[in-house]
Image (cartoon, rainbow, N blue to C red):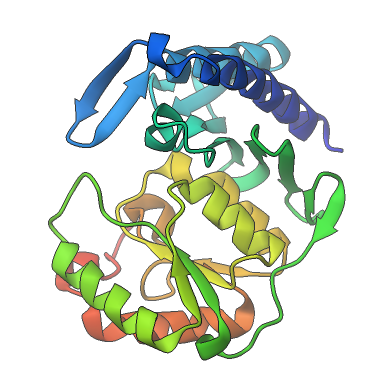
Length: 270
């Protein structure tokens, strides 16, 4: 295992242990609302600080972009992108679908990824050029070729409803052309499931970098494709993402295409 990936795994497991202990008494947690339908608990903050402290101990000059504390550090050539608890709403309701997500971006390229599911003790890892793994077992995207036989993951808009009509049109079309649509509530795990071949594809709009960075590297290292809603490279900046196995990716893009608005199309210069 790459040394930097090893540190990320250590940080993710520490955060996961903290989250699991807190899940035993959710009612005692302090929770505040960041914005409409967007919550943060003291566990999010504690888990994030645990991750940063663990990584900073090994790499004191590295920079961080984390969901709760934002950007910190000066060496942006090595940038850790962190979601300490992806699926906070699930966590606060006792719904066991949430994860720790950590990615390393070096000189603008994603190079290391960890997604840790503390409920199932599932550890998804990837290093650029070395493949993707689940609990040390190599994983690959699914071989399924027909959209009508596919199981597709997605995420419903829950904070910003500016694109809700376009999304619902996409959802309706996709629902009629696939074997099924699933919305478990953690984009990080959804992307990990694409990498593992459990989902054949995934799409969502309006995500943040920390939601998708680690999962995207897992998918590409597992043989899949990642792009924005038109299949281009702006997905990390826009937060509009499509992922899937190579046979499914284009079919998803084609299905979404009639429903794209100007606001959802790739923006030049990103």
